[in-house]
Every structure is written in C-alpha cells, then in structure tokens.
Amino acid sequence: MKHIFPFLLAVLVAVPVVAAESRDRPHVVFVIGTLHYSPELTMPVFAEELERLGFRTTVVMGEGNPEKKTEDVLPGIEVLKDADLAIFFMRFLKLPDDEWQPIEDYLKSGKPVIGLRTANHSFKYPADHPRFDWNDDFGRRALGTPYIVHQQSETDISIVENAKTHPILTHVEKTEWVSEGTLYLAKLEEGCVPLVTGRGTGRERLLKKRFGEIQVKKDETAVVGWAWENEWGGKVFGTSFGHPGDFAEESFTRMLVNGVCWATGRPLPDAKEKISTWEIERVDKKPRKK
Image (cartoon, rainbow, N blue to C red):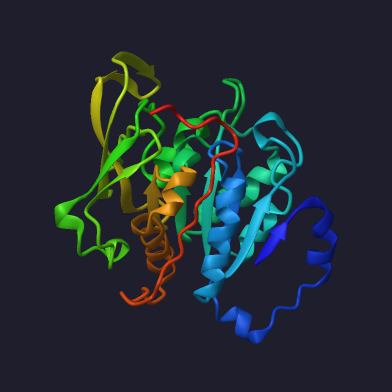
C-alpha cells in the first residue's frame, strides 16, 4: 500500500517502474478529503485488507483539515490516472483546478467508483464558482444521489430482500443490524439498484434544495447502499455507510470488499474467506449519548 503525502511525492515520481506482477493486481486509489467520521483511520486499514486480498492500493491524503484548505488539498491526486477503481471519502472541498481535473478526468473515463458516507457532498464551491454545480452533481451524477440531510439517531439496517443475489451482497449473512451512524436520506437517480435500507429518527423540517423541496419526517427510511452505472458508464457502489463503527461489522466490511471486487471484475471472496473488522473510535467528534 502506498500513502501519498507531500514529503513522499518526489520518491513516488522518481520510481515509475512497476513490477509485472503488480500490473496484474487492480489498483485501488483511496481519496480522503475530510476528517469527518475519521476516514484517516478507517481507510488505511481497509486498504491493507485489500492488499491482503490481492489488490494494489494508494491512499491520497493531505496534511491538516482539507475542508479548510484551497491549495495542496489532495497532494498526489494525479495518481488517479493509474487507478482501476477510485474510492472517495470527501466532504465540502474547494479544490484548485489542478487537483480537480484528475477527478473529472477519472469520472469521464468510465472507470468504477465507490463513494462512502459524505462523498455525495464532496464539494462546496461558492455560487459564483464555475464548479458550483458540482456541489450537488458529484453526488447525483457520479454516485447516484445528491446530499439531502441526515437524521439524529443510530440507524436500523435491513438488507433488501430481492437484492440478496446481487454480487455485492454475496455471503453477507446478516439481514438486519444497527449502524452507529445517522441515517442519510437519499434521492436516487434512475437505474440505481437498492441493496440496503436504513431507518432512523430526527426532527421534522422542510428543506429547500436546488433540486426541489423535501419534507423530512421524524421517522424516515432510506436506501443506504446501492449499485448503479453512471452517465460515463462507470460501475458505482454508493453508500452512506462509513462511520467508524461500521468497520466493526463484518456484514459491512464484506459488502465493501464485495463492492471492490464487483467494480473491478475480480472474483468475490468465498464464504470461508474471513473478512477483517476493526474496532475504531471516532476521533473528530464525541460519541453520541445513547
């Protein structure tokens, strides 16, 4: 696994030779652009799991809080040109042109994408910025839903009954469990295949979004995991899972491994293959009182 940090860039650029056996291993690039939900802790360990299962991985992550930066936000993001799969975990970024372009180029290449938790609100450009539309469109066009809002409770998870034969749900034995993360509401694009739903509670409110008004009820149910093909032909596994507590649940980590295999056309792990889990505490925010 490679981690791209500013002080490593010179080394990585200076050694372009890739062993033949490495070329046969799909290259998964993790793009971490937030500290929200502590992906700087969860994504590297999941990358190690993929390495164990036969993938090459690179973790792109800058220093400091990326949401407060407008330069050197995602150093090394140009590695996406060598990716077979991009896994995005970003939030409210304002990338400069040279860091945005590799992402746009990757999407338009038609390669597969996985978006975790906050990825559907990856960008927060001001209204007068030429990429303002991407604030909603990255979620909508690349991943299958724009960001709407989240509830305030834990989320009761259920596997969609008629989706159990989908490759992403292969050998996911549980049909119900509880996620520590709040429920994210979704407005799925046409063609999205619901795989997992969640139920959570919050407060009633009327939201006025660019794409219309949404009345949020106290008790809501929404799709929290789906498969799709976006407008550029890229396979998509979109999910609002991604709270650190989710990585302690084998049903989720297996689903995520399956999603990687499905997206890259690799064989799925069989039922006897143990998929790792991790007890990781969220460090960006105190745990919710139960």
